Figure 1 (spheres, helix red, strand yellow):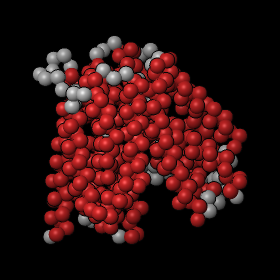
Figure 2 (cartoon, rainbow, N blue to C red):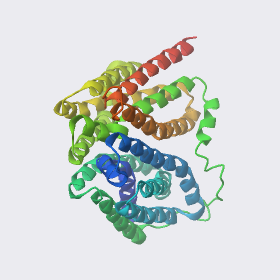
Figure 3 (cartoon, rainbow, N blue to C red):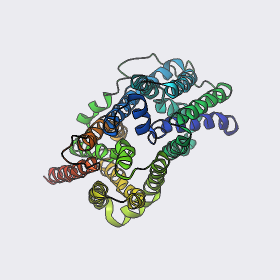
Length: 405
């Protein structure tokens, strides 16, 4: 396809991925109020259900990502993308009308399945792109995800002024409109020449971990990467519950603070990281990031002022320098012909962290905010994240000693 022919299909793909990445962020600002509305419990109990809803969404994305990718190799990109988008629109509508926590849970399960189309989108873009165009277009995909992560909480917080269900109606309408758009502009790119049978072995989401045995010298670092991801997920996992309990913030303020955090993260990982690495090196940047995160987590755990928290929130994004610096160290550790395997392992480790972290963090929040708690400390999950930074330092020391020996 030439550039003119691919413009509209590529636009559809970018909008689809933006909607996918909005899936979690959109409901974060209204999560505390929505769960209490349908379940009738207190904020601490709502946090537990919030962890469950977030975990099942991430779990479904992890499991169904490779499944949808393999299905698209067999049946085509178009039917998989359009079917997922159509079901997503209906799912958001069901969640907008849900009157029980169990219906919300089913909605999050289905939503995670339909939002697991990243692999299909990458495959479609690869199909329609010339070799020299792929890197730039893959970059656009990353940008679409970033935009979704930023505007999801912001839109969710603003729409919450019209009720806890308003963000779901808006998401359903957006998904439905994009479905209609895709129906008319999305071509099929899988031909008989590249079509292959569906095989469950290729669709195994845990398959990437088998590559660890082929990547000597990085097992400690992969473990550290997992611990860091679990710790950093504390922000989306409990921020809405923490700020309501500690500062009494409404959904609009929660959404604004998360949007500011997302923009700051984009600045850090998109440009500032290069400046820091040039001055500190990858190992120095990694150590700085771990120390900075530990201080940030401690500050948020003990802070009493909502104004100071709002100022600190975008600054804490500086701790995101850990991920790219750690990835750079591991990339230099493995051979050139193992880079793809390494990225597969890290993607799987990150996905597992997104599954386990919400339940851990919301359980800690519950333990320290329930009426029978020995001490009222909404920031307790941040103290756990600080402890995980200490564990990362220990792992880094062991990995350094292993390389030295």
